Image 1 (tube, helix red, strand yellow):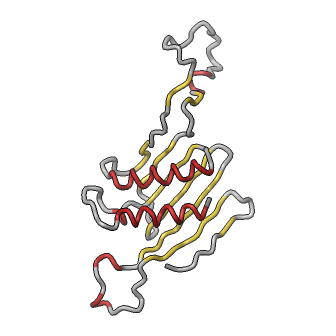
Image 2 (cartoon, rainbow, N blue to C red):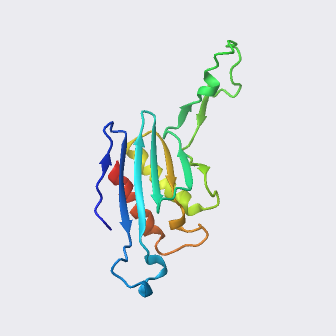
Image 3 (tube, rainbow, N blue to C red):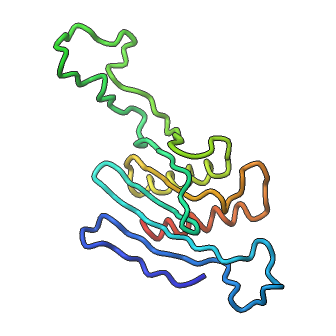
Length: 172
């Protein structure tokens, strides 16, 4: 692992750093094993007034995106509450919800393979970590190839998750 220099833009909205893991520069090519090649991670956080976006590119690849709603039990559903074209105030929702929807903290897949449970778990843990420090809607975009296809369990899965969480924590 190399030392990280966290870069912060002048506006303070963005932070990022790069980590190289598994350097094999000192080994002969014949001695390389399948899981030992160097992997480059770029952790990037964008923070807005109502949203946090965290990008975790792995060897320059981002192929899965998830949305974690604001961590509250009830969120105002603005589409049902604000209707500028229709002044009919008598038309209320019959279910008594008054325009609120229950989000229950579910993670929503925006782009990616819905059947890869490993990357879904990683994204959920990253979103949960981010929302403990910054309770806002969170978008997590991550490269999934390093974690495998989601069908096989490997001994290194937990260590990989912890590596990602430790580095995300550095951005918060």
